[in-house]
Length: 98
Image 1 (cartoon, helix red, strand yellow):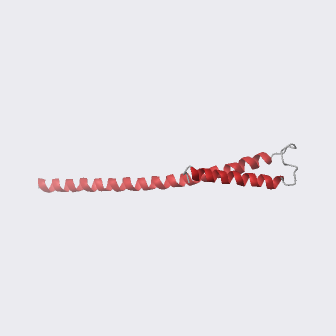
Image 2 (cartoon, helix red, strand yellow; image 1 turned 135 degrees about the horizontal axis):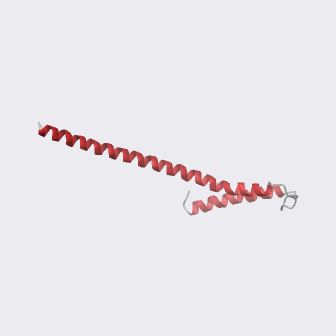
Image 3 (cartoon, helix red, strand yellow; image 1 turned 90 degrees about the vertical axis):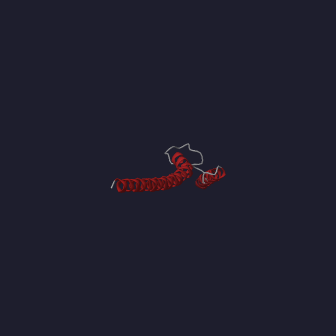
């Protein structure tokens, strides 16, 4: 009788360890997925930063903003914003963060 109880107890301990290892594996996968999503959101925020800064500065209601009265001011600022975004993407790829 005691032998059967010891065997059942050992089997329960084995199953408990297997279940614990399975749970640890699942939590590791969830953590890795969360890290990937966080990385993607950080890249989007970093790349959109120049657009927000440049648009915010030239969107103010002041008279003496550079290029505000120029006929090519809009296109110049658009090229500057796209260039800054492209430079950030190149930098992130060069640093192997993308």
